[in-house]
Amino acid sequence: MQSLVSKVPIMVVEGNHEIEEQAENKTFEAYSSRFAFQSEESGSSSTFYYSFNAGGIHFIMLGAYTDFSKSGKQYKWLEQDLANVDRSTTPWLLDTWHHPWYSTYEVHYREAECMRLEMEELLYSYGVDIVFNGHVSNDNHQ
Image 1 (cartoon, rainbow, N blue to C red):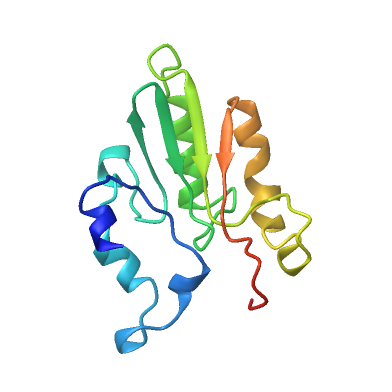
Image 2: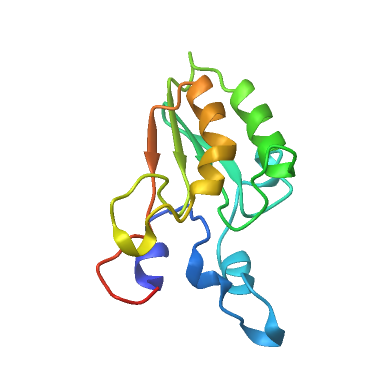
């Protein structure tokens, strides 16, 4: 991975494998210390959710492993971030997070339903154009 990320810029979101305990029983330590995040620049107080512009796209990275409830910090940040998007400058609005809200894959079916129920309406109301997710794989581990 180092040979790729030393030459190609990437932005990341946390996933289920970062939950695994690491040194001193901490979780997400490697994730938070190995990558650069646009947290402060986008008004976020967390590396789990942040946004940035690239070309004509406003990218929003959401955290599936932090509070996503309507009363939580991430949701309030997301509302403000979406409200501040200038669609004349960045006409495309792209969101990404780890678990897909919709999938027919049995192993992870409806795994992120709680997040969907909290956030989906907000994303629709601002006309998000594209959503990218990961997590679903063809192996048998969970």
